[in-house]
Image (cartoon, rainbow, N blue to C red; front, top):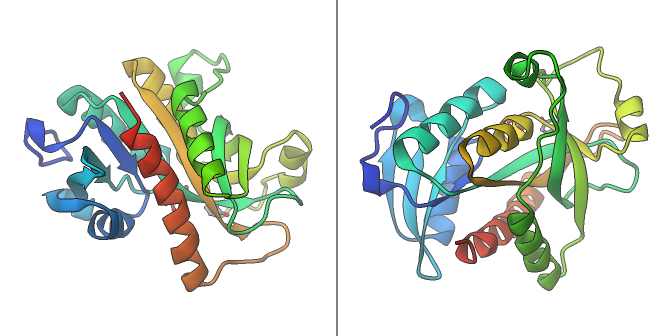
Length: 235
Ligand SMILES: O=P(O)(O)O[C@H]1O[C@H](CO)[C@@H](O)[C@H]1O
Ligand SMILES: O=c1cc[nH]c(=O)[nH]1
C-alpha cells in the first residue's frame, strides 16, 4: 500500500494505463480486460487489474493536472515498480489540420507548469516520450487505419485560462492542449521507466467544435485499443 493507492504489491501490473477520469478506468477495465478486479478506491481514484490478450495490465485513474498525476506516478514507481506508463487522455486541438476524434501520440510536451523549473533550478527540460512505446503505438494505430497525429502537445496548469496565447503555440507546432503529459514524461525519466501519452481530441479550442458523447465513446475505444496493443507488446 502507498498513501493514495490501497493495492497489495502484486496487485498492479508492470504496464499501467492512466486515464485522468477514474470512471474511464472502470469503463476500460469492464469493457476491454478479462477478469478485472478493483484494487483501489482511495479518494474514488479507481484502479483495476485484469488481462488483455493474456497479458496482465492495470488501469489507474490519475485525476486532472500535474499535481494529481504526479502523486500517482510517484507511488506507482516507488511502491509498485511499474515499467510502462501509458496515459489515455483527452485534449483540445489548436491546429487547423488536427480534428476532433483524431488520436494524437505525444512525442514531447511543452508546459507552463512550474514543476520542472523547480526540479531543474529554472532550466528548461524537454519531457519526451519513450521511443519504443511511441513506435509500437504508431504501428498499432496505423494498422487500424486511424488518422494518427504525432508531435508536441502542451501541458497546461489551467483548464480555464484567459491569457493563453493559443495562436503562438500553434505557430510553434503545438498540436493540442491537455494537463498531465509533461509530468508523466519527466517522472518516467526520473524513475527510468517508459511512458507515452495517447490522446483523443475531444474538442477544438479554436473552432469550438466538440465531439458528441457517442462519438467520444467510439474514439476513446480506438485510443484505448492503441494503448492496449502497445501494452501487450511491452517488455
Ligand atoms: O481526459 P483526461 O485524461 O482527464 O485529460 C484531459 O481532461 C481533463 C480536463 O477536462 C484534464 O485532465 C486533461 O488533461
Ligand atoms: O485539457 C484539456 C482537455 C480537453 N480539452 C481542452 O481544451 N483542454
